Amino acid sequence: MNYRDIITIEAGKRSGKPCIRGMRITVTDVLEYLASGMSIPEIMADFPELTEEDIRACLAFAADRERRLAVIGG
Image (cartoon, rainbow, N blue to C red):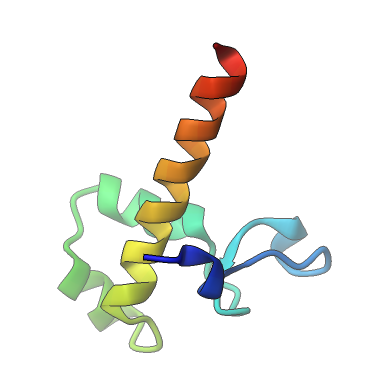
């Protein structure tokens, strides 16, 4: 999955946090919902503008960021 087509960063939106498709829903929001135990269908029910691909893009973004931090921290 190429999350770069879905995850956007705009300086004036949500303080420059990574968001989904230019919306005000951040990657952090979605990751926190998943961490709290919400399922993908539950998140999509609460936020009908999100797709399963959007949620998976958040996971891919987080995994890529973690991978980069591991390399930097060496």
